[in-house]
Amino acid sequence: MTSIIEARDLTKRYGAQLAVDHASFTIQPGRIVGLIGPNGAGKTTVLRAVLGLAPYEGHLRVLGREPFHERAALLNEASFIADVAVLPGWLHVDQAIDFVAGVHPRFRRERARALLEKSRIAPKRRIRDLSRGMKTQVHLALTMAIDARLLVLDEPTLGLDLLARRNFYDALVTDYMDESRTILVTTHQVEEIENLLTDLLFLDQGRIVLDASLEEIASRYAAVAVGADRLPDARALGPFHERRALGRTMLYFENADRAALAECGDVSVPSVADLFVAKLAGRAA
Image (cartoon, rainbow, N blue to C red; front, side, top):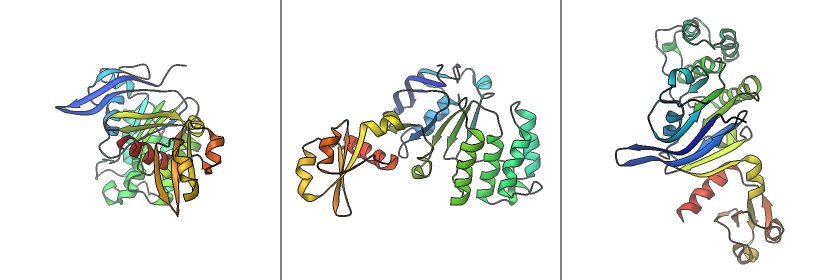
């Protein structure tokens, strides 16, 4: 199977600052990958390299192309939603649709109109008269109407309320995603997309600290809620992180004996958010 994205020793420096530090990962077709990291971890820098918007060191191929030198060809097959949508204020919404239809060969005009009808944004309204959330919805509709093999989302629902965010992700999975398309998304609202993701990439200080599918997460990692009486036994099994929660201690394990863990307390698969906090806290310890 040909990879959608293949990175080996991907590195990006800004003067003396190492923004991305020899990151290696592979993304296959038909996956929804969450690129998760704290502010300043290098997430946007990785996305800029993937889209050919910045030079880099190391090996990087996206849709079989070298992004920085084949950017125009790449962007015919990739689409990008940034955290801040910049659309000319004087445009009417329907004029924005006409503009994108004129410049992108894979744009589906009727798809954009259908998405905007769901948001109840009138086509004759000017962009400058829309709220921040409505401007974001217009930008999302325009981008999702592009028939792209790779969709890159950088905090795509910033500025949207809860209902609009949920509608966006529902449309993403129901109307956009199929086995030939791949989505790479960064967001701080991890809990809202956890059930959509197929794979995780955790990034910290420019380094990949976790690269796994959700199936691998379920088999490799465990969270155990332990009472005070069993805490010494649980600690003896080698957790990589622990925290207090509702009168008990939560301990996090990787590749531990599940039967032994069950003797210490209630075993569960950690949520993406909890695993992220545990991995980065354990890494800092």
